[in-house]
Image (cartoon, rainbow, N blue to C red; front, side, top):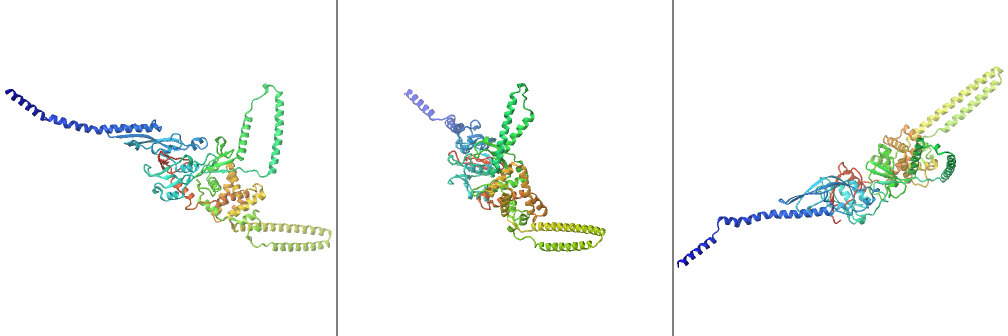
Length: 625
């Protein structure tokens, strides 16, 4: 019995100890799970951050950005920092890198916002953009910088079509243009190629979105780029002169061959020691011959001119029409048309008018308003053309005062009759005189007649000078003709009298030949531009002065050629308010500052190289483009 009681007491004590939890046990049972729960977010953040970082690195590696990107991770705060470079992009040269310019990139980026990599770019690193993200799908490629005007020119070069409504809205609204507004469309006009994007990360610049597909490129290197015009080489028109020139060249060639043969025969008799090396004088002669040959070659080749908003940028001479080989292109000297203010303005205006057709959508150069106003005004007196023998009196209205020629003829007849009577009477009186008196009287009579004839000649010269002065003054104040009519008469005069204009060419084709010559001949271009300046000056001063008439009559041929340029500017289809060309020009002008445009990275884009554009931010579509 005592043993059983002891065993029961021990069992009761054990049960009591088992059911009793000490404070230590309580802290252990509660603290350990709480500690584990506190570590789980850190473990989750670490695992999620490492997983996202791994995905980001795979994306960068797959898109070729792993060597240029820098990644950092904060596993505690679940933040990943990615440093990606920012670029200013520009397309490759149209002639020397045709494959890169016209083709798509072989490895476009699949990172959201990287579809601008669809094209091949000439890039320039300009900075680094740091992105703080949590997930891999938040990664974006930084914006790239591009010139707005270059972008429009490049899309036009590829075959893009401007959207008139979009450009009109951009011109009126600016940065408040709605997102998604289309500025350029695909060549078939069904899908947008250039649209407005959200202003996120655009720093107050235009934010645009560009898309392009392989099948949309409808133009190639043989097409003339935007903002360029082609000036054809003047073709010879006098076959007789060409035949004579050919015969002369043939005779010269045969004579040269004979001289060369004689030289060979003479050299054969000489020893090798007697052969002297070419002198410096012969080298200079060879160099001059090569320059002369190149000048003759340029005169027979077409010229293509590049224009910016400031005027002529460059001029290239081509041996063939297709713009396919840079080896066939030669740069020409254009300082006389690109630096001098008068030459730059007049040539650019005339060339713009020459290149303006019914299919023209955009011209980079805008003809100044004062030039357009001058070309539309009637400033040339018709009397100027008549006294210069450009037109006949039957073609002009009555502008001279009533002529007193009949009165002058009657006065001259009466004077001659009176002198005849006086001479007869004096001779009869002399016949009754003594020989000595008769000789003296005859000498006196002859001296008197000579003096009378001299006085009559002086009076006639004075009256003729007075008549010419009156005629010139009346010609200056005669009715003014339309510039187009003046050009038509001048063109007829050049064809008829000067034999320098091909009679088969139209006015526009003649102007093309004149512009071609202005590029190659600086003195010729300077003469025409100075004449245009004189013409514009008297038009702005209220009319022609006698000094201006002397300048025109002293350079009548130059004036006739200048009138053709003015007539073409007048006939040019000028862009009026509300038209597509005006909207395009105004938008390019408004967004033209020293800064370069931002091209958001979510657009597959393409640009062209031009300078001075307003900031534009290009947002891209996405990697699916």
